[in-house]
Each structure stands twice: as structure tokens, then as C-alpha cells.
Length: 144
Picture 1 (cartoon, rainbow, N blue to C red):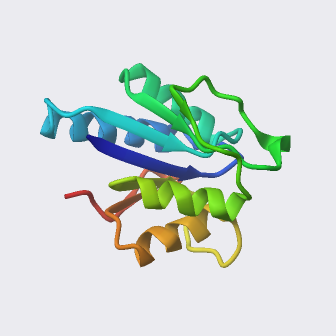
Picture 2 (cartoon, rainbow, N blue to C red):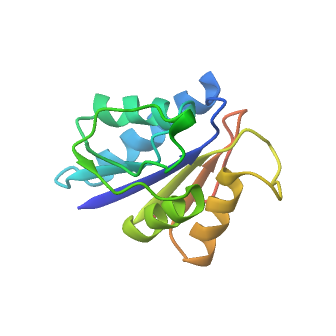
């Protein structure tokens, strides 16, 4: 089982980011053709909902980790639902449960604020394989 976690901007990924994420997910599946894939995301509007569509297009199992504050919740259809947590606890739970992380931040440079960058920091600290897809489609990091 390959569990892919996602964190991204609530403002939505750019078309170039989405295209690059599609290629990354397809490449990952091609390298592990017999594996089952599970997508974990925070169920927020914007990039989480976009990643959800990418996972469903690939027929992946989807695990939703909703926030307690559901004002920006996308309410994506899911196969599994975790208990609601605060945004940071929810993001930490995603990082803990997955084998790989994919991130789609709004900014081209690392920011001190924002849940996406804090979650990227959590993934780094946990030494999870991580790929960051920037708004221009460039990437940092790689999966094994």
C-alpha cells in the first residue's frame, strides 16, 4: 500500500501545478504497477479538492482528514473519514499516516506563515519523502 498525503493552498493550484502533479502521480503508479494507492488530504477548498479529483481519476482510495473549523471544507466524497481535528493536528495526522507527501504551495518561496508550509516542515521533520510542486510547475524533492 502506498499512502500519498497532500497539502496545498486553499486558493487552488495553478493549471501548471495540476499538470505537473498529474505527471508525478502517473509516474509513481507506473513505477509500482501492482501497488494499491491511498490519498490522504485535509478536505479544504482549493488544492485539496483539486488533488481529490486527481486521486479519484486514478481510482485511488481516498481518506479525508477534516478540520474542526469547517468554514473552508470542500466536503469531498471519501472512502474513509477521520475524526475532525484542528488544522495543525489534522495536518500532522496526515503526515504521520502516509508514506509520501505531495505539496502545492501558493508561493514560490518558503513562507513562515500558512498551513501548507507548516505541513511541509512537518513532513521534513518526520523525514517523509516529499515533492513540492511550485506554482510555475517546478519541483523540489523527489520520491524514492
